[in-house]
Image (cartoon, rainbow, N blue to C red):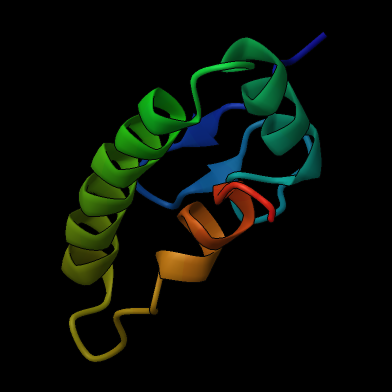
Amino acid sequence: MIPHVPMRPLWRCRNCGAEWPCQPARLSLLVEYRGNRTALLLYLGALMSEAAEQLAQLNPDHVPDLHHRFLGWARARG
């Protein structure tokens, strides 16, 4: 079984090919960081920075906005 982890420098899921973090990766991260949303956001922020740098190197003319993809879904509800 291939885990749902990022394939760098494309930042696609090694398992399903979707943009990472894909839905299964998000669920796994929420379980792993249950009770520590701040640590999850810090981790995702560091990965977002890495992804932005790598994606910019691949295509300098188009750097996607990664905030929603990496952080928007992980914010605490309420």
